[in-house]
Image (cartoon, rainbow, N blue to C red):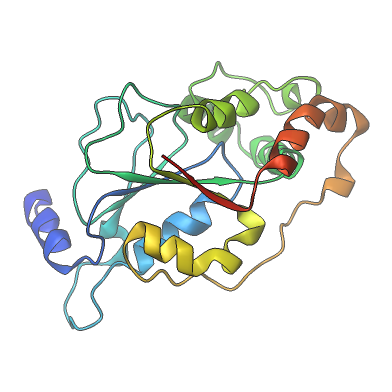
Length: 218
């Protein structure tokens, strides 16, 4: 087994990620797609021997006091810390909150353990999937607003459905050529949403609809 210290050195030596990148979201809105795309694009193409792609990525569920390493991309669902991890840039992925919530309900109904971890990652009390229908139990609107209203930039906000149209901007912001996977339609459709859920997330849907597909906030 390769010692952690040697893996860190190997990542720094072979990564195209010049400065740490954090991919954030309120969950089930495309952050995993972008995180894995950056992670899988990190290795310098001229090198025949490089660490496995998973070594270029890490999870950062708590940003407060986090020490990030160069050469890596981090995935988070955390809310704004007192200050951004030193040297890091953040890409925040957002999308239709109804589609995201339906995805959480489906995944959480399949696994209570996953649901508990998802609540923990978002920093909210544990709740059941059905709790999300009548109230924003995961506080995802608050999550998005807290990052939009914060002053921890530069932070790039990108709509999930527009990732592919803004691939060049994503690459420029992240500091390396990012190859996105083939576009796939969501497995959940908002047509499946019960009326109560649509009513619960109507204010957030208005907020999300008002945002540009891409913007960088200082």
